[in-house]
Image 1 (cartoon, rainbow, N blue to C red):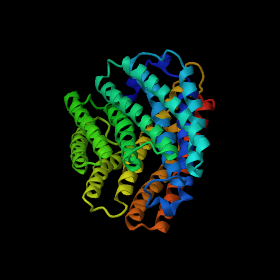
Image 2: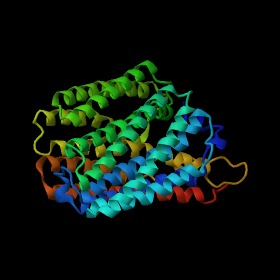
Image 3: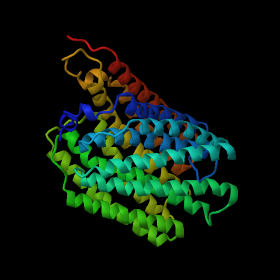
Image 4: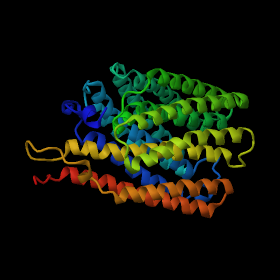
Length: 425
């Protein structure tokens, strides 16, 4: 399935450019703010084990500001097009954005400062936004009969979203009233549901559409994809129960089930890329391959941490590889492919003029700078966590910040070029 075939003839099902792009632009801005916030707390970040402050705020700028914003913008645009069923109304999508954005800013401010009032206000607004996102995703998935595998992954991700939202509310309330039997156990459940459940399942599910589309390959083996889903959901269930009950054996079984699921998924992805007609997929798929490698690496670090072989900061490294290594790398790699294409469809042009080439709507140097800085940040911060080295962590975070500025430039440049009248020559 080509990108053109995916969106071809779908002009009536495309949202106005300002709708999905507001989510993508916000994700690029929060990406910069996330690294900048983390830089203020580099000494604590490399050995973070919980608690209020800049590191907790930066983690939620990543999960809610970058990952959830990107997922929301992509899903509300791509699912209706893929299912050939238009969105019934645009206003709920806009409402979602205008609740989530200020709510996130208020929430992370409360986390940064440790103040109860903004924590309560921000968490309430974010909860409403996530419930609205769940409703929008559920409505899209309900009509996605032509994409059974993506739909199945989406429903599982939706259940994870609802569950992690409930745990997030409980974690914030626990700071005030100590309602949880073990705050650390609940935080690990929250991490598993957010990283592997909601975002992880969405990333894997969308891969079964996006990777064949980008590589001009055939449809994936849906039976194997269903096996991946069953193993992944089983691993997430065992992981959450094991984390909540502090059962190390169950967590270990969950990690190995996750390894089995990711092994089958990665073999499938490799087969799709090998069979595809397009072999040169550019820098974005260099990042995709690195993101894929982070999944088993993250799980192996988790297994080592359970056995006491990952050092004092093993759980910190596990969370970093999950959120920054796999999910952030993967979503930014996919976003740099989606942005120019959607911009080419929406680009201002004369009547009868063909859409501009994707290469005409973006520059390569910001993406090259971003990739170099992002990969340097991943490597440097990982070493800093292992060595518990604050200065090395600060260097890695600074590299990530520079890369995020380059990605923001790329995003703004794509929007600028799309809104300028295209040359007729």
